Length: 346
Image (tube, rainbow, N blue to C red; front, side, top):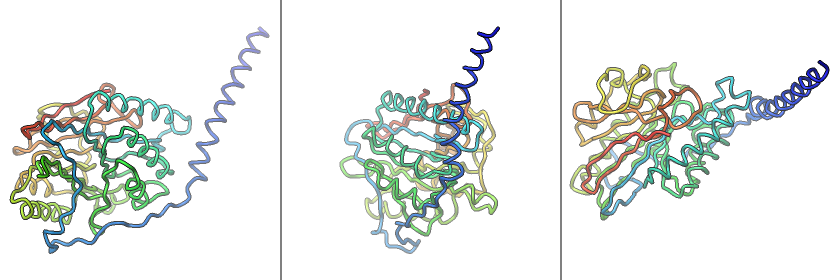
């Protein structure tokens, strides 16, 4: 009996020590480590009346080969909104997710990686954003993020997070027009011999801080900016290239989609006040694909009046997810510029 009591006492002491070791840094970062981090806006002025010669884009040359895009979303690093954060489990989940993403990158061998927001959810969002950027830069592959509704729910504002992205070696992030909704509205050209075959529109769909005011979602001025860019492409190249849009929060149209070309829906679409104007604008301007994140248990791709609309696949084990539904969505732009969509799971 005494031996059993002694073993139990030792076990309880070990558990208590582990709990203290885990609790101290969590308490520090949750309570003390909240020093406000304010960045500088590095955007540029734009208006619908701007000259089309002012077209600004990032470029990625595809040559004569297939061009592969890997889409990641909703990593939710640290996810402070769950009880798991206080037990240190989120550190384990982040580590496991990093390993899974690394294997996913090796398996898909992308030419470009897109990240559709909710990368972090923690008071120390600047630190975790920097860690994620270091992880992505470690692959030596160009990558491009947009903000999700949770990324700026911490001590750093979007301007500071934008600075971290812009400082990263392989990151294509641009702040974009300073008077557009959010931060990080920019365009990436996929080119062959210098001519665009696809334009990728990276857009900020807003923050949780905007939910109560009803201002989250892709707004009218962003649609104007999209249409202006398409006119600028036509002015510059003599044609409107095929194009895709990527943002975090889905539009209202997602809620009415019930038939899927591939993938699954396991939860209702959580959209913000949006009248789907961006989708209608794209239908009139050679748009081919739209992808969102936000709803972790959905990864379907569906037809929307001839355009493909879908969810990127949740790319981590942190925050809620459905077993067997984590990984990435892959777009392959073939040498003939036709696009193939695939879902690759961890």
